[in-house]
Amino acid sequence: MTLQELRYLVAVADERHFARAATACHVSQPTLSTQIKKLEDYLGVVLLDRSQRSVRPTPVGEQVIAQARIVIEEFDKIRPLVRAKGDPMEGPLRLGVIPTLGPYLIPQLLPALRARYPKLRLLLREDLTANLLERLSAGTLDAALLALPVPGDGLAASELFREPFQVALPQGHALARKRRLQEEDLTGESVLLLEEGHCLRDQALEICGATRSPDSEEIRATSLETLRQMVAAGIGCTLLPALAVATGAADTGLTEIRPFARPAPTRTIGIVSRTRFPRAEAVSRLGELVKETAHKLLAG
Image 1 (cartoon, one colour):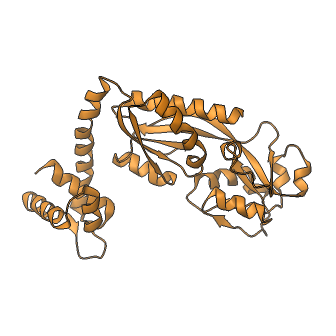
Image 2: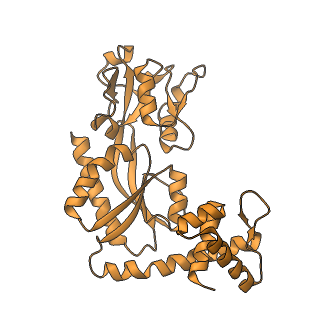
């Protein structure tokens, strides 16, 4: 039994498909299939159910795959551990980021990152919170920028900054006559939301869910950009995180932005990694730079 065979097995479990797993492992499908069959012969059990169109682990396969992930994670700690003895900000770091934060923060973060840590190679993945947490636990991500709190055992989270929400209104909307809004001002308004799976949707519902008109039609968008265009078209209003406003993403000329009266509702952004991740220093320094970048943007 070899480590590479375990990597192939985990890849098939993740992809649920031999061809996609082979592509992810940079080998041919026959090579991958042969190695997994060799592993099954060695263990004397069937690890994968190949009778379905989508390959799925057998019950014993699930147990072996779970242990294989631990073995791979522990093995993969060796090189970062040695590297950390030199420069912790050297080499690749796989970072996840939620879609309601990435487009507004990352373009501002990368130049500062290159200037301060030129040897660090940031590998970015934008995805929904649940998917990023799954990848963190599986070891395919090193850290993630998420809205806190997040569920999950074996994860360490550090708060970086608090981001206020603001209200985007169609041009000429009655609420635009106010300089600052109260949460109650949204009573009866058509508040546009992101689709399920976005943490921002849940946060928006916490702020205005109780005051939304039960008769209003709910339109679920896939991105803040879609919501912004809907507001500009006069379909309704929406909540935007402050970084989306500060970076000019909300400025269409057809929308009006109004802050909430203090204390304004906010979301907490933090950096999350595995508690046993060997490059904790790199995660900490990256988090500090994210905090600096966000504070500069929010300060205008």
